[in-house]
Length: 376
Image 1 (cartoon, rainbow, N blue to C red):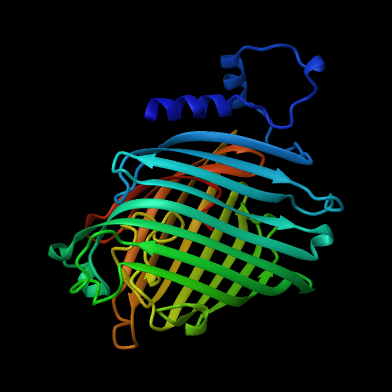
Image 2: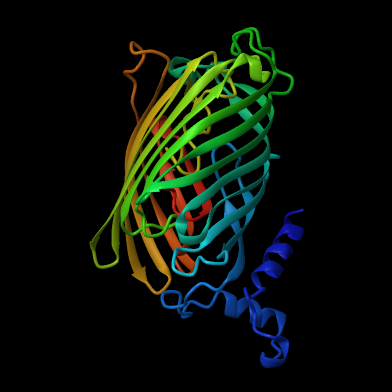
């Protein structure tokens, strides 16, 4: 299976986005196309994005929950009619398979409408994860003996349609659907009597302030995001609750080739969230290196600061530090988990980076992350 996936990666990498007509391009071999695609001296800083372009890349990945794997990612940049003076719309599609049996298909992106009067943000994920589960709460996450194996199927669809009310300020409705199935696990102890299979239907409102120069790889600007989702009983939710998601990001060019980026995030669930819909600490963007979902509770607060430094040609490096906490009430909001790490960046398209991060956490937890675009 890995050999087939590698073959697909090399084949897709050989495709050159928005190619010229066949009669104007000299014939080149398959391997020459691959070599040209990854050529390090290609100019990625002065070329303007075409009306539509798509690029593919693949590589290894490793994380403490999913183990060694291969991933394929595709990035599309496109412009709708009337959008020539604003940043291009973007879409990222990813596929991953690992030696632990984990597989995932995902897509996310932002479509900009003429004059940036409207924006469509979307996210779709389908995954199977043979994942360890320690229970709910910070204390359970620290007890190794509590660990059981989940054979979890997760599906997610989320969409936001935003309208510009003022300069850089947007507001609009959102819809979200989530499904989780834990597989055969005794729910009486760690699951606290909750269902194996949970579905949630949510409606809400999003407010966004965005002055970033480029949403996928900002050099400057401010990003503020406030999302309120309601999942009431009358929308077929067995577990009724609401979620408040707040994010704040700041980007500043410190010196030539260096960007300092900071993010603070707070996620609060009010009501009766299920085990699958609680705040999960650790993923490819936040608290990198922690086992995804080992620490889970109703609420989560995290913060991180990252230095991104251009090095040579297409290469750059990052270093970051941060901390996070999960809790269920004010009394339990006292345990902080450290996070830090280093990473390598490779600009395979103009201001579109492949990132290789290695993150560290408490008690020797660590993980390697392969992904497209910056963590935040």
